[in-house]
Image 1 (cartoon, helix red, strand yellow):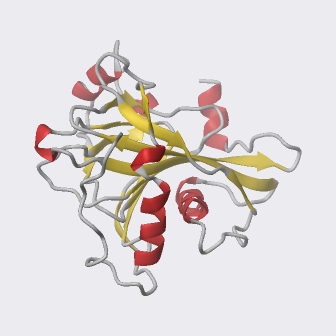
Image 2 (tube, helix red, strand yellow):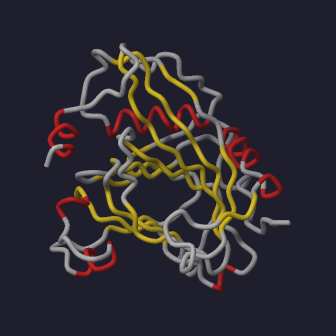
Length: 245
């Protein structure tokens, strides 16, 4: 059974309203800190209980990434103006933040914002190789970090702050990163932090170092997309251009 040795959050976060703030942002990302108060943070941690997670091979590189643990989280839809977001629903709130920061259109013509989520846990020796989540429907992806974490334990999120189509056309994502004209941006997996990326942004999870010991890197990850009033995906002008390039 997967066990969690990470320290408790009780002494760190008060039970008052959260003081969420933007930590950093760029062309295609936003990082928030202090996303939830202690009660909601605890609720999120309890939802991603280690005994609910199952071993899962990497969807990117089964040979190199190692065996992580996962479970499918909640999915649903939100009103176009996000007026129906439940203040006690952790995943719906994360999805709403992602919609606000990654969608370039107004809600005109949109009947709902849809979202899905996955509970993930990375243990010593596991990683997730470079990929860009360029799904035909998604316009944004998010990762919320659940546990105290040391800067010596690895597991950072790296990404290239540009559309992956702007990177050099090489045989692999790894080579594209090496020959890119920009350096990767790194986000430390700090507890109660939310990282939001536009879909089509090349990113990876660094390998968790052996110094992490029995500590596990747990997250709630998800994606968001739009449903048009005619039932089809809402597509902005950039998507139409990329689809025909």
